[in-house]
Figure 1 (tube, helix red, strand yellow):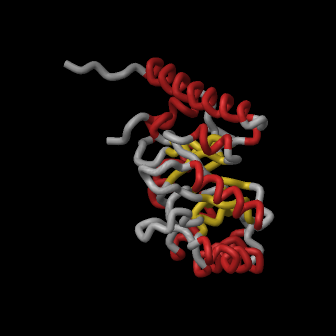
Figure 2: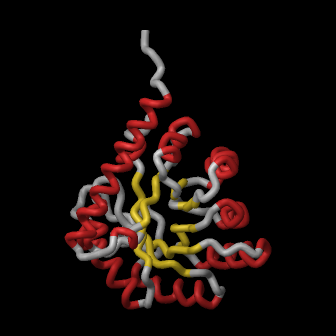
Length: 230
C-alpha cells in the first residue's frame, strides 16, 4: 500500500528544491560579478497541477511560467486570488487568435516571434488597457521545428514591435538540445546589446549557471523545481 505524501513533506521538498536553484543562480552570479537580484527565476509549471504548484508558492516562489493559455486559465485565477503578488509568464508559443486571452492572463510574454502576433498583441493591449512585458523569441539555432524569428529577421521584427508600441523587455531563446549552450547564449546577449535591449530570457534546469554567467535576466526552470513530468 502506497501512502499519500503529507503536505508538510511536499512543502519541505519544494523549499529544498527552490533553495538549491537559488544557490545555483547565486554562485553563477558571483562568478560573473553580477547582482543575484538582477536574475528572475521563473518556475515553469506547465503540465503540473494546482496541488504540485501550491508547495512552491508556500516556499516563497512568486513568478511562474506556463506554455499554454488554456492550461494557465484553468489553474491560475484561483491561485492568484489566494496569493497576491503572483506574476505569470507565458513561455510557450502563442497563436494570434489567443492574444487577447494572453494579455488578460499574463504579466509577461516570452514568445513574440512574428509580425502578425505583434499586431494581435498590440490590438489586445489597446482594447484591455493592459501591457504585459514582451520578449522577442529568436530561433537562435535555426531549427525548423522551433518557434522564434530567424536571426536575420530580428531587426525587422523589432522595428514592427516598436512601431506598434509593444513594451519590449528583451530577447528569448532556447538553444538546440544536446549542444553546448554557451555560444548560443552569447549570441543572444550580443543581439540584445546591438538592439538596445536589456532583458535576456534564457537558461533552463540543465544550464542555469551558463545562462546567468552570460547575462540572463530571466531563467525558466521546470524540472529542477517540480521534478520530472509524467
